[in-house]
Length: 332
Image 1: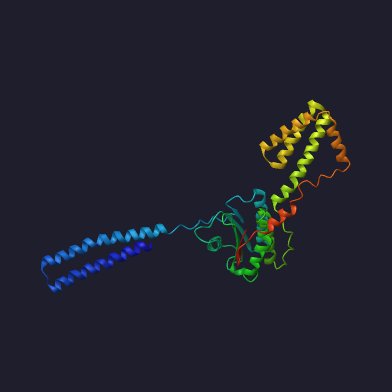
Image 2 (image 1 turned 30 degrees about the vertical axis):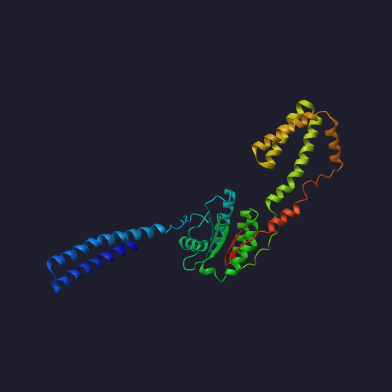
């Protein structure tokens, strides 16, 4: 639009200049051929100027990137990257919808991959204005924006709630209640606890007590797998020893497959556990090894020492992650 206006203005100015040139040459009374040559030159230059202006305008428009689109406000949780499961999303929507009906203030969650080319702050403000969160005339709405590609969380607060949730309060909620869970991959827990704190502040209630800093999922899983594998090995040997070379391998294969699926969630790993279980049960079928292990197990053989050596280290690694935050945003 700006380029079209500039082009129109250019033609007006150029036309006026040519007219002025024609009048000036008439008053100066140069020869007819000289006046004709000057007018011809002016008219020949007009297309050149016009093409140059259009080229510059086209280049300027091409260099202006399109802003990220704003999704339609269809529910209180808009998850464009499927960060949450259907059950988790429905749970949050019910809680936010119930609060909006009871209190009037609206809190919404938007999860996107990226806000480029603009910042999360600029994009969040546009979303808050587009969605018109809160009651008309009060502007008592809050947007919790999560940008997964940039690992950023931002809270935009409407004018009607600025005294209730200041920049410092928004920053505190993000840093103390949302980011610790996001750093360990527990996104639903972080969002749920953050929303709980936001709704409490709007209602004029004290913030709920902080929950214990979560241990990273990877550390939890790695701590338990060796112990479970040791218990599974004992169970397979006992099955092979008690049920003989025919029934034992079949039962051990089934047990190993189910345990492999429960531990790893992979078909191929569960199949491998089933095959290994059948082989172990067949090798130890009818032997005394399985019975001896069973006796030790009943006598309280301590297997808890397997895999516990790195527990403290794993938890420590989860706490060393850095974060960068502004007045109402943070990164995980």
